[in-house]
Image (cartoon, rainbow over all chains, first blue to last red; front, side, top):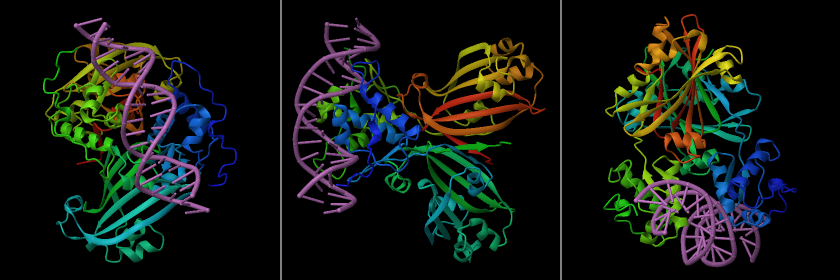
Length: 255
Length: 255
DNA sequence: CAGTGGTCTAGACCACATG
DNA sequence: ATGTGGTCTAGACCACTGG
């Protein structure tokens, strides 16, 4: 028993199912919960009652209830953790990423707090893909960096960055102080660099991505691939990132 | 009875369910069908056997089978039409859209045939949103254009374009001949224009979008908003488009 | 009319996480 | 040991589409 993690258990307050409306029961449930999330009555991180409770409360089967919950999970509003419970995920008050600006510059226009977690920083050998993107030979020494960005408490972005190791002998030291890639560039004499290419595609969260971003596996996501080049147009960084579909908007060429 | 629309009914050939593997039954079914689609054994437009047939053939409940089918629908591989059947949708061999190029220039790099359908061309009054995007007063005369693009037989893109009517008195005539917006611009003395801003976000297909794109409602999609401006930086076109998530990749700033 | 997919019920067992 | 979400069964009725 978890005590009463959320004393009011308010998730379903005020829901009464119309007996035979034009819309399916699961959609009525879906709409009701979504409404309570978007209105803020259910806040991010809050736990919902168990599926059995909710199904009994509504007089429907778990199967029916789960239709609604699964849709809400696919849309990024809820996260389920097996053996634990279902939680409000959100925000996802969409915010904008402008091409050519740093992550922090983009976020700063928002009021919420932003955090960076470095999950991996290691030297490795380039595989086929990363070698190609960096313009080096397969097997060359590269540096791998995996970071997760949090908006408030919610992870909203995970990315893997790859660097040609020979350009950055002091990567770890330069990075360590402020977790800033720009610092690393500057420390190695690269004061101007440029976003050479950005590719945006769509996909579905792998189990690994889902765990990091606190999503249900199979949730739709943005996949972003980008290359940064130095003044001589040599590639100094290749980034592969993943965003929940509903958390972000990409802006190109704006004012 | 539809006769045998696909004589072999090959959708499930060779599938035998492992009794208690590590992966759920529905995922085994999912993987099997997806494999047959991607290998080309199931071709676009082909109809699957009915759910009852397939469920019986596999010795599972429809509920279990539908788990697999629904996932495949969300990913854009299958389309279900109530009262009719389930069809292979595909392609979606992803193809790339480069910013700043016309749709046709982008597609021509692909081998498949491309078609344009004009679903609507009308004069109207600007609502709040379109007025704001076009930089005109709400209620001003505007021109609305809705088009669908097909790759092969599959609709892969629907968009609504809005134009300030006062700039294009002869829109219909200039457009009619080749269904070309560039022609309209040229006919009104606009020989150079520029993509001022592109915004990419994610969402889920509305019933209307789903019908047009032959998707299941709720399928994840890209939403693209863009503005074109003339030499004087006045907005001459605002576009709102919708792509199935798995059909396209957007490329910015490439070679 | 018969066949289709969409919805729903009332059970059940499982793996998992927590206390 | 308990409660959680994940999976699955064996039925059922419905609305829709087509011939």
